[in-house]
Structures are given as C-alpha cells and as structure tokens.
Length: 438
Ligand SMILES: *[C@@H]1O[C@H](CO)[C@@H](O)[C@H](O)[C@H]1NC(C)=O
Ligand SMILES: *[C@@H]1O[C@H](CO)[C@@H](O)[C@H](O)[C@H]1NC(C)=O
Ligand SMILES: *[C@@H]1O[C@H](CO)[C@@H](O)[C@H](O)[C@H]1NC(C)=O
Ligand SMILES: *[C@@H]1O[C@H](CO)[C@@H](O)[C@H](O)[C@H]1NC(C)=O
Ligand SMILES: [Zn+2]
Image (cartoon, rainbow, N blue to C red; front, side):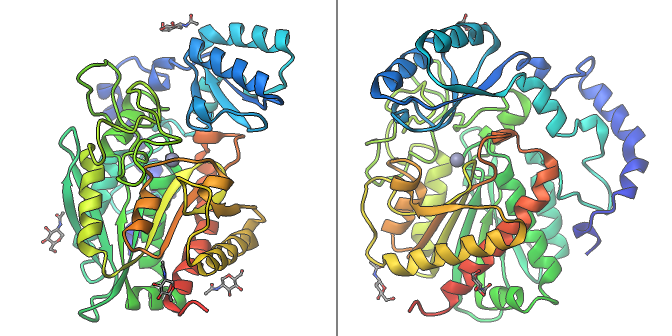
C-alpha cells in the first residue's frame, strides 16, 4: 500500500535528480508554456439584455476569445454568466468596448500566466515521480497517470485489472481500470470517465483519487467494501488522451480531441458533442474551429467510438454512467439535448439530491443539480444522454469545483478537498443504485 500513501518528506530527496532531469528536457524554460498567457485576462460578464448578448457574441467572434463558460458563443444569452479568457492583445479592445456599452463586467484574473504559475506548483518545485510514494495532490501528466495504472495493475491484481479499449487519434492506448472483487460471475457495473475535455484537469485527478480511496479503504470502510464486492467499476482516468497531453505541452486551455480536418486548419472535435444522440443539433457547432464542434459524423473520434463500443457491448450490466467535468459545481442528469424530464425522474432526482447533500456535508460547498438542459445549458450529442438512451438508468455528469474564481486553473491545494467531498457524492449515488429505487 506504500504506493498509495503520500510521503511528502521523501520528495526532497529526489529534488536534485529531478532538477537535473528537467534542465536537460527544458533548457532555458523557466516559465510554464513559454509564458504564452502573460497579460491575458479572464473576465466575467453578464449581459442584461438581448442587445447586449448580441453585441458580446459579435465581439467575442472578432477577438477570438477563449470562452470558459458557457462552452460556445451560441450559448451566450441574456442573463447567463459568461467567463471569457481574452488574449493580452485583445483585452484593451474588449475593455474599451465594455466601457463604451456599459455592459457589466468583473475581472476574474488580471494576469492568467501568474495565476497559472502560482496555482500549479512548478515541476521544478517537487518531484512528480518518487519510488515508493505517489502524490495524489498534484496534477499528473498523461505518462505519469499511465505509469500509475500499470503499477497498480501489477501490485493490486486482486482488485484491479487494466486493459485497453482501443487507440486514440494519435495512436495512444485508451486504458481502463476494472476495479472490484472478482467474487461472482455476474456483477452489475458502474462506468466512470474523467477528462473528456482536456483542460478540466481536476477530472483525471478525481479518477485517480477514487481508485486510491477504494484500495485504501476497502478493508476498513463497510460502504466501500460493499461497493467493491457487489459491483465492478470501469474507470477511465483520461478519456481524451491526446487533448490532455496537448494541454500539458502546448495549450493549457485546449478542450477538444486532436483529430485533423480535411478542409480547415483547426484541429479537434468536442468529444462531448460527438455521440449519436440528437447529434449536432442545438448546443453543438458544425464549424471545425469552434470549441463545441460536433465532428464530421457521430463517433468520428476514435476515443468516442472506443468507449461507445465498450458500453454497447457491456450495457446489460452497466447500471450507471458517471462523467467528470469542470467547472460549475453542478450534478447533472439527462436530458442535455431537450427541456424534458426523463421517465424515471424521481429515482434519479432523489439520488442527485442526496448526493449533493452528502457532498455539502463535508465543507459546505453547494452544488446545483437537475437536468443538464435547464441547469447548465442545452447540448446535443453528449455522452450522458447517449448512455441514458442506451439503457443505463443512472447517468450523471459532475461539474466539479469551482464557480469561476480559478476556473480551469483550480490550484493543486484544492485537489484534496474537492476529491474528498466528491467521493461522498459518488459513494452515495452508488449505494442508492444498490438499493431498489422506491
Ligand atoms: C493577437 O495575436 C494573435 C497571435 O499573434 C493574432 O492571431 C490575433 O489576430 C491578435 N489579435 C488581435 C485582436 O490583435
Ligand atoms: C494487467 O495485468 C494482467 C495480469 O496481471 C496482464 O495480463 C495485463 O496485460 C495487464 N494489463 C496491461 C494493460 O498491461
Ligand atoms: C423505470 O423504473 C422501472 C422500475 O425500476 C423499470 O422497470 C423501468 O424500466 C424504468 N424505465 C426507464 C425508462 O428507465
Ligand atoms: C446519502 O446522503 C444522504 C443525505 O446526505 C444521507 O442521509 C445518506 O445516509 C447517505 N447514504 C449513504 C449510503 O452514504
Ligand atoms: Zn467538460
């Protein structure tokens, strides 16, 4: 179990080696992402009228802003909170425009580069790899996460089995952990995926946390024991492996996959708009350069196709589908693509209500919950709607912390509290599932 612990004291011993290692890899790079976000701002705006919303959409398009909330310009409307990341060379124009039009705004981050470097400890400040310890309170690169999976597959073969469900666009393996005691031939299962959207780093951190907690508390916690005895958990820590890797090496705010387009230079498809359920309708874009691009056809992305194939094959026993995103502090269930309640609404609704209460009981963090369409926004072709339509009765999407103070740059200091409270919600939903819904 050493690997699951977090002996901080051991980190110091590896520091000199680590520094040497980094010097060779990154000669002369003292700043993350070559300081490309220096002077960029993140601004929160709430258009009060339709005219203001229209004007904002136009200037967003002109200035090519990186929209953080909502995820596409088409979703900007009267009364919705919009958080925009504006590059340094466009911020002057945007601020002038806002003062001219009297649209209400608040600067969330004055200098994105500074926030980025403060929140995530620089690689030079700590050792990411140590021989016997593993730090669950830092964000890990794709390579680190995959090494961690291989390691657990070797050291915890009684509870964990690691396998690949296919290859990504760029040829990386799509790894899944099957977690649970091999007690009976037939067991119901829960699917959990993290990191459909690359820049939402708290997702993969939670998937790792979940596995750690399961292994650490299996013996001591009756709830966890029950979960692992009666169910299998299929856990995919990084769904969008290419995008996640790219968000570490090139663009911290990359969202989509990395597939090429034959007619446009823009790359990537929104892996949460690419599913065959009301595909490419409201809340998805047909334009390859948009962050909510639905792709040339449903399941065009090898990552989506691989997961869809796996879920189709195992849908008889997969009873729940859970997907982890950020940020908004919401627990969402179907439908995403339309304003309507699902048939067995009351079971799902009460599961969500209890899960959110359980989450809040830890640090008082409040989550909103409800159908994704009316709670967040309408989006078509989402994995959650697809899973629901394909027979998984309990399907949820978590939008983890926070509500915009740090946004995608949730500091590593907040990994532990965020994962601790989320753990309770997931356990609560899982236990709900094991009972017959009233
Ligand atoms: C800001 O710089 C980028 C990259 O150099 C460029 O593509 C973009 O057009 C510039 N934007 C404005 C508003 O000048
Ligand atoms: C996990 O371990 C099993 C045997 O212990 C092995 O057969 C399997 O190939 C391993 N998975 C991966 C992805 O290496
Ligand atoms: C609703 O729940 C009942 C009882 O659990 C189940 O038999 C039925 O298939 C469910 N319907 C849908 C649409 O999920
Ligand atoms: C689930 O959460 C509710 C509300 O906080 C709580 O009453 C219940 O005991 C929890 N159930 C489990 C199994 O954790
Ligand atoms: Zn997301």
